[in-house]
Length: 448
Ligand code: ACO
Image (tube, rainbow, N blue to C red; front, side, top):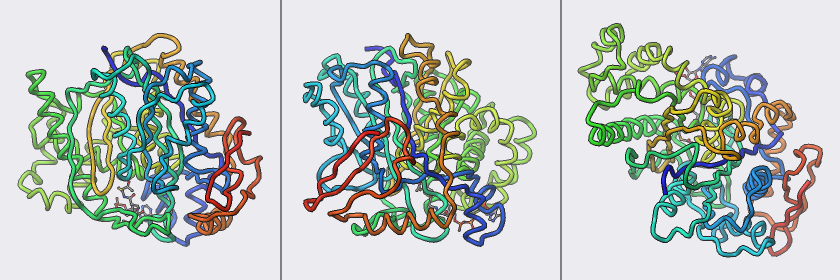
């Protein structure tokens, strides 16, 4: 099979959200800390009606309906998530409800978990399956979903919630360039969830930023090496049209792109003009460790990268800034934003993807974009995702109601014997929602 990749996409996020500007006032932090300091506009969250299972049910059902895919045509279903609802039963098994009804129980795949990397692991599993000798000719389906919530404190404004569903197959408009993957994995305690009674992670914010940037450097070097071996010429940022980053908050994406420019400078690549060359020269002698700690380098490379950032990165930032960190779904929401913003001009272009999951697992890979054939065309994907309408039809909560909701969600995490009490009017038409959890912890869902 040729041009294996993403044939179709759907994204779902709750309507319930809180403005970062309002949170700044409510939290009593300085004005601009979340909106400029973190670069975030708004954050979605789940009420007791929604969780990663309901969001996945919604995204998958909607994808199958809108692209008119027969559920019998799915041969592999992979879910990436770090939101634990059950320590044994995978989210994938709940999704089987959709397929059993149509008489299809022959679907390989279960869940993949490692912080925000699970969606990428799920995607690679599907792509590898289609490129393997065990492929039976049917589609793969990938779901990346999370509800990101943090304890009170500096990390709280970096939450979010969403599910992205992607149909995988040959002759895809978003085709992987499997030859150039660059991966970096290591053992660190930057962000982890050791307390099984709580949904909140333990996070070393500063360390997680450094780990993210070190992983990016390492993946970029490996990606470039593979490209150069294959193509017989140097790779630079000019060889990619867009880059989608895993986006915990936008400021880190700005820093990351500056870091890539510094990488190109160190590699004497052609993307670095004379001016940048001169301004970065003073940092050429820094040790690698010192280069992560240098505020001056960070500022200078971010400034120098600004024009390229506006062209190559800005189109990917819409959903991550508006919805927040969606963990496994974040990178794919960035890709969805590129398609939403640029679908008319993407033909023949390259999109690079940086996936980072704390702990840590990371990969830099790329897609070659092609026109595609209906229903798997960029314009149809854009129409189906309907991003602007979804953003415009949200319900803004006051920060005090957002905090009240989080408190209630804390009491429901791992609980049994309760019914959902939030108003159904908060749901989009066609959305699945949790109705109750019974005395055996069994969960029940309905569709609006
Ligand atoms: N106006 C403008 N900018 C401001 C203002 C203001 N009023 N106040 C602060 N800032 C800036 C700071 O200068 C800083 O920017 P800089 O890094 O460019 O200097 C930024 O806002 C953040 O402020 P800090 O005080 O440095 O950090 P804070 O204590 O708010 O914590 C953090 C931020 C670490 C990101 C925290 O939210 C966190 O731990 N989040 C979760 C961890 C995370 O997302 N890690 C990323 C990779 S792992 C993952 O995906 C989960």
